[in-house]
Image 1: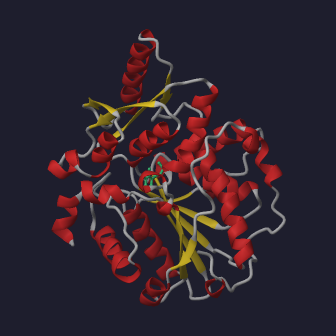
Image 2: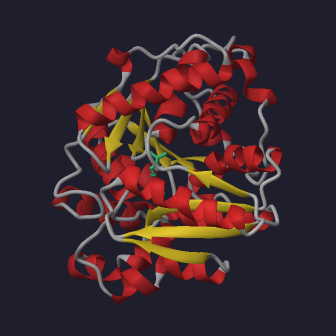
Length: 359
Ligand SMILES: *Cc1c(COP(=O)(O)O)cnc(C)c1O
């Protein structure tokens, strides 16, 4: 829904001469297509009026149609593309019990006529029935995923190794498994989805005469953040991008984004346009930790719902919105901030007990 009324400011920050050529091999890498683009950019007028800071906009990647949507749809286009290129017939993936990623992987696998095996890690200690039975895990079951449990939620390398064991098992049974890894050390194909999204966003901003001064996005695995930042810089756009830490603190997350950007450059065969100084992150809204709430996040969830009917989850988008609100308040009214809504809707129901205590 790009309507002209909301896009009235000329683009100065955006290099109008951006050329997709600077994205190297992006257009020739295998990609399964299940994200109708562009996703809409909407102005959040009520929230803007309430905060009296920068004009706030939202990119609705939560509204991607596949199985309740979210940022993982764009990421999975490249993993599934690679899987198809390798003639895989089964996708293997690991994640938290309420992982949006594994739910979307199940959906993507089904669309591509593949089987789906999911390893669920125990990451959030204080969990209850809704956490184990509703939200994403319910949808995993509906999509017919084969589920496994992994006890150590903080051990990424261990979770990946277990996934490799499961894959070896499937191979012995004559299947052709494709593993989507969790840990570092693997090509960040998912980030390519957000390199594409950067191009899409610049085209939208250009067409609508928008000039964003700031983009705020959740930073978990870092694929969304790194891909977006890489794509914007490669296309000559210098807009400030802030990642909101949702999984680990700022320092290790900077290293992670830096690592991803180096690997994206290698995959695309272009120079890396992202210097470490350019990686902006806040972990002010992370406490007490992954999947746990703090006062600013609760406020952000309530405010977004009650001003914009925008539904945010407690793990990712609630924290990213808390960061966006903080930034918008510090900016002036002539400036523009874009919040990337990365989805997570089903997680709201998985975290019903936690949310019911604070709403
Ligand atoms: C996974 C996820 C994120 C974080 O994205 P990364 O690419 O892993 O950093 C943010 N929001 C939602 C809803 C997610 O599911």
